[in-house]
Amino acid sequence: MIELTRLNGSRLCINCDLIKYAESAPDTVLTLITGEKLVVLEPRTEVLRRTLDYRASVLKAAWPEAASALAASGAHFASAASPQPSETSDL
Image (cartoon, rainbow, N blue to C red; front, side):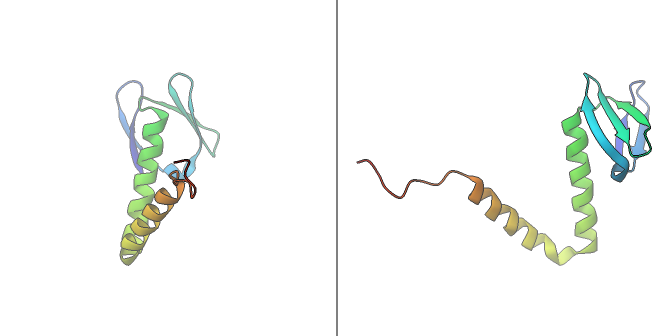
């Protein structure tokens, strides 16, 4: 679950697996799979970050020895996505 803030300042915890859509209109509107809509103070990108952090913590708790493998895999994909120097040069 992730903790968010309603427009009136009250805090709530939401099961992020129930979020179907997160929209910025200009407030952040979460549409749950039940059809219920929630408006929160946090920007959509913050809701996404908290969701990813929560899911990563669940995976770490369930599979602690995978943490180093996941970090190495993430580093590999990050380097693969960065532009590579050309094999030929115009010197």
